[in-house]
Length: 222
Image (cartoon, rainbow, N blue to C red; front, side):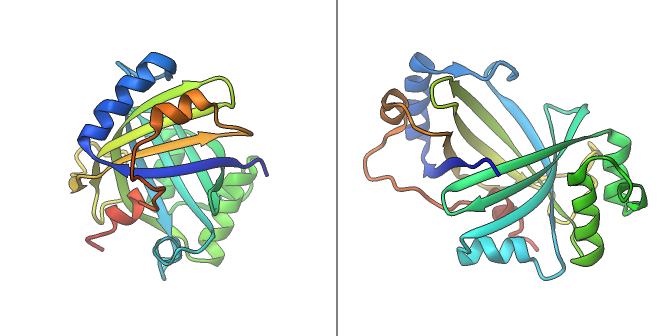
């Protein structure tokens, strides 16, 4: 399993303006962003006892979660993702889904997943059958991504966090989401080393790495 360093900071609006300006002079906007931004909509999974949520809130060092995600309202490109965290190290596995396949998972029609050639889809099927994992809530937000080649660095600024509450039909544009947090989340990811130029660009006085979870924030209503 390839692991990357991942550090989050909860910042304020003034911090965001400063960091955005610094990064714009030393890093590069993600080439797939639109005007420097993404709109991300994800569907998160959990089991009947909310293990992923409880592990996050309890600070368990080893955590896993599944989600389905697409960007900027474009359902022609959808991915199933499994995110694994071990302290400040993370790994993400991904498998492509069609809109039809994603909708079947939402609807509980999962028999087709058993013989599917991608191992991650088979793993989700097994977890749904054995552990009772099922779709829990929609999580959506705006992201400003920056990249820097040395160290394979990716810096993201996330805000406008919204929840589908109990709605899981995330391909349905009429599924209403509501704001759940005014938080702004800075996340820095890198491989072997973090270049000083990026470290300086994202540094802020009196800020420590945090454990803010967009998924946990979006479960505030149940």
